[in-house]
Each structure stands twice: as structure tokens, then as C-alpha cells.
Length: 382
Image 1 (cartoon, helix red, strand yellow):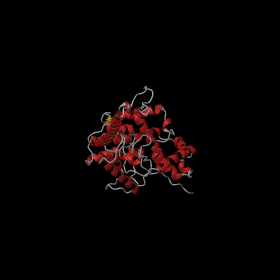
Image 2 (image 1 turned 180 degrees about the vertical axis):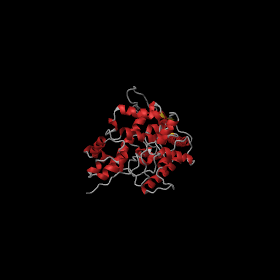
Image 3 (image 1 turned 60 degrees about the vertical axis):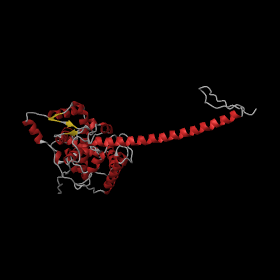
Image 4 (image 1 turned 30 degrees about the vertical axis):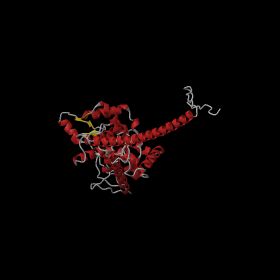
């Protein structure tokens, strides 16, 4: 009798997701293997909370309204715990999760963390994205390898058995075999296939990259880095190189474009930068090179400081230079027209003088305002 091997899948856990995994269309599976992480229970956080007498950690946000500060990573990991344990496979879509369940999630968050109530909508959106990504990983790591093996598919992966009900798991497996799921999956695969510029960011995402740049003195503490810089740095390896030829070509184009912007040979419209010129206008409202959840309006309306102010000043100086050039062209046009008018007046004066010498006159009249003005010449030869 053949005994089926107890199978499980090893994959980076939901809580290990980078905040940038939901920007730049980075749902593309990375081709390089990354260290695997187990389930995140955050025992240290819970123990510290108890030992402190229930002191909450303050959740802060940066200029782009992204998680920041000392507890940024811990807070993101806690999100993973919540959606995996309190939602998991109970509901097939985040939009079908009842309000009372979302209220429970928010209650659990505010139990351990000090966060403003106005942030709830952003937090709920983040939870929904994490839930979708968690299920995507379960599908890719367990469902797909076991297609055609009903006995294996019927078993909940070992790592999730303590938190997932069998009925919920069965419902999820059945849904992944439906035409509806396959249609949505194929559309997402098509979208992901169009994006080949994978980054090398870990779970910290662009927020952690920004911290590293500050530590390396490549960025000031209160400076909002340019998207061009962040996009390039996110795709460099530890040696500052690009292993992918396509990524290197794009990075070179970005650098060339930045140079042209700085020397004034390329004009920038408001709300555009080097990435806009290289990739074109953003689609879907979210921007490349800034991480999850940052819209175009939020990014461009954020106050610029120090280094980013220098960049903005350079842009304004370039715009002023272009305006001066345009003004110069208009001045030349006015000068040319003035010369032409002077020549016309001179010719007209000569004609009038000639006619006066012959005892003839040139009568000029203006018609009513609702008609075109015209010049009438009296019959000179009667």
C-alpha cells in the first residue's frame, strides 16, 4: 500500500511581504530564491506589551503617509498575523468580509498600538492587500503543485492547521478550481508578465531602503528622495550592480534623463520627473519607486525638504529659463512686426504725399463696430 508523503510548502510568509510588493506591479514572482520565514506570532511584542502594563506602541507616518518610525516593521508583521488568523480562508474576497469582522480587526490593532482613528481606512486597505497576497502564495505554493492530487489538496498545510477550519479550506480549494478564479488569475498573470523590472527589496520595502540611504549619508533625514533614485537603488545588488540587462538599460536611461533635466535640456511639466519621461504617465493612480499606497496626488503635493527642495528649485530655474526664452522670441516677433508697420506707414506717407502733389486725396473711413474695418479710396481718375 502506497503511503502519501505528508506535504507542505515552504514559502515566504505573508508577514514577510515588502510594502512595495503591491506597487510597480511587483506581484511578479521573484526569480531568485530568498530566505524563508516561518509564521510570525510576535511573541516578543506581546510579552513586552504585558510586561509594560499595557503600554501601546505609537504608530507614526511619514510625509507620504506611510508607516514609519521604530515600530514600522513590527506593525506590518502584526497585520499579517491578523489577516491570517482572523480572516484566513473564511471569506473568498476582502470585500465580502463583514463589518463586524473588520471592527474586530481594528479593535485588535488599537489594543496594542496607538494609531489615529482617521487611519482606519488606510489600514483596512492594507489588510485587504495582504490577505490577497497571502492567498496567492498559498495557491502558488500548495494548490498548484498538488493539482490532480485530491487527497493532498484535501489536507490543510501543516503550518496553517491550527488556525484554519477544514470547511473554510475546502471552500477555498473548490474556488481555486472554478472558472471565475481561473479567469481572474489569467488576467493577473497577463498583467504581471508585462513587468520585468523586479526589485531586490525585502520585507522593509522602500521605507527600509530610505533608512539605509540615510544611514549611508546618501540622503538627509528629512529629505523625500526622488523616485528615480529609489527605483534604481531598489534594483541594485549589494555591489551596486544590475544583474538583469533590461533593468540596467532602464537605469541608464533614467540616469541620462536626470542629467538632461539638471542641465536644462529637458523641460518638466508639473507632476512629472525622470521616471515619467522614461516609463510614461502612471496608470492606476499609483507611482513607481515610492512603495505601496502612494498616489500621484499624495506624492506631488507632499512638502519638499532640503535635497528635494534643491531639485524643485532646479526645476523652477529651468522653467524660468524657458519662460525667458519664450519671452525673447515674442519680443523678436514684436520687433519684426513693428518694423513692418513702420515700413507700411512710410510707404503710405509716400503715397499720400504723391497724391497730394497731384491734387488728389485718399479718404480712410471706419465702418460700424459690427463690420470689418476697411479702407476706401475715392475715385481718383474722374
